[in-house]
Length: 197
Image 1 (cartoon, rainbow, N blue to C red):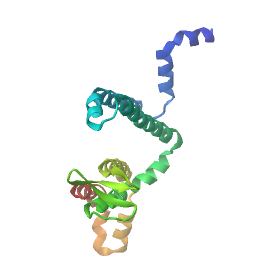
Image 2 (image 1 turned 180 degrees about the vertical axis):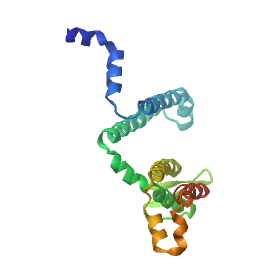
Image 3 (image 1 turned 135 degrees about the vertical axis):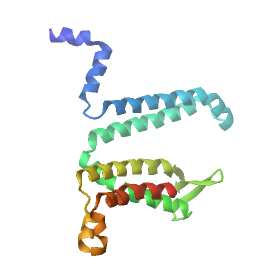
Image 4 (image 1 turned 60 degrees about the horizontal axis):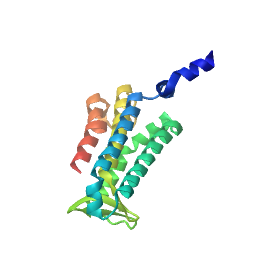
């Protein structure tokens, strides 16, 4: 009887069973898969022009895009199955600092040897790391989303540590114990500073 039920499930049933095994937000997984599909379709539809502009062929361009999608898919599932929530929380706390570091390197046009600010189309947008261009604004968005997720969760649970400690140690900083000043310090100021940089 159980074998007959397994055979009658079909592809859709197996897909539903697979999605039921995930403990995270299934909608986010589906959106990520949908965006990957859109990227493949959009690159496929523009490959004739890209091939003419770059002097390459359509197959090479499509294979390159499929490699990027496969790497992204692999990273998502690796981080999902390997990562732990407490590890992501600890890394998220560093998001604002990481954003500031890469933005300062870019804004000050620093050359640190293996990492330097790079100019693309007359604008300083990339960091060149070992000869490869990295569009840092994409990383800054990711870092800040992670940081703000941590900051909002920590604010909601009232677990900010160093602002209340400073308020207790120094009388002139007693205002830091109030919620509004913690919001300004941990949430509004990081948003404003990364936006202005």
